[in-house]
Length: 330
Length: 204
Image 1 (cartoon, each protein chain N blue to C red):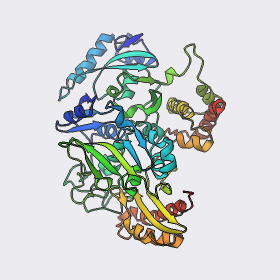
Image 2 (spheres, rainbow over the protein chains, first blue to last red; image 1 turned 180 degrees about the vertical axis):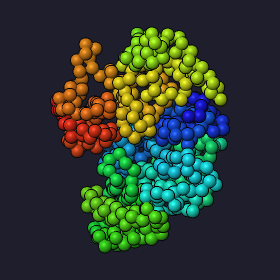
Image 3 (cartoon, one colour; image 1 turned 30 degrees about the vertical axis):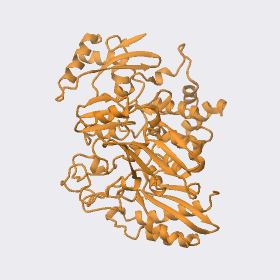
Image 4 (cartoon, rainbow over the protein chains, first blue to last red; image 1 turned 90 degrees about the vertical axis):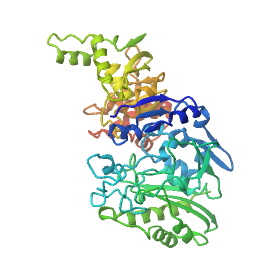
């Protein structure tokens, strides 16, 4: 592991000041960063420990109209919160079905959103990877790409965005508050935080160097209670998604008044499936409608060798999530 | 009582290490070990020197001087000399290194020791009573033969104690879900679930 300087930041201002140095990384839970530093894939020269920032950044503020999550809230802390369980089941599901309890005790929500892909060719320094080394190529294109993405891919990168929580946030139109620029913190829609790989897969998000996510805001809607996450994986627990679907529905009788759909395990970034939402809106939700919505969600999918199975698997995962959300009492 | 790197007593491991290095089988003088560690860290290209870290492990204070790259796991094993906590994968995939920090189960391989300065760490060595009576979870693992090779067992037990304390041991299915971060390559899972159920019974 490359040597680094360690700085403990007692305040937000101190953290932002420390992070002005080049090649700095913030560290909270460390569950992603320490792993990648051990592998030599990430090599920050300075680590700024933000675990000692004021308590307000580790608090959950839930009301009838919105949910405000400090970026330093731990995944397990949010998954245990009674109001999140009751009013935002989708958020709770995405947390509960992620990683292991040990990791969820460590991992911060802000860090969770920015976690790196687990693409084996990104992890292994012996392989070509445009994300790790711009211009070196992508070993996954013709490699063993069973876990790789079928949506949002490019000729430069097909690495899957591995997170679950992000699918809840993109489905529920969350915003993130970001500190670090001049003046007041800026607020951006969560949907614009991550960047499609395109021909610059080494740039994964829209944060400027030294910027820090401080809060996550999720508005409550008539659809947040009837929301559901279905995650399909190679083993039942402690595994990344092969395909997942986040669904939030507002029903009027059997008719869909509003639908929010996001897909995980199949795309390079947190993925909102608006084409599926349009199929659902205003129609009676039965299995055939769910199938049509799922087909629309994957219409643009581009399989690559080993991952073609993700298209039918992803469709069926979405159908199941829609039908399960329909039968929730909300 | 405060242990320093220099003050740690001779464990089985220091004995083995020393025996390998010296035909007289005496533990390395503590000063020599500290000097050797200092040299290693001082030789790094960025000059990242040793940093002082106070860890409180099993109610005892350890004043350690560590390379900032030292994980909590390596600090516990190699510097505090508590080798009950095991290193499996070193990448957060197996759970062998599970310990409690401020009462929460975490993976000691995924955090730098420096980040845990001043926190209360509990390892498998800290579970039993000072008089030596086993923790009910340890006894339950013995009663149910919940291991074969035993390498994952300290992590399993630390995770299981927390699983019960969190209130996540109400059914076999719940135990399997909340213990999923601890792999057992001998596949003693049915016995592990039975042991957790036994230990959880009075509190369920």
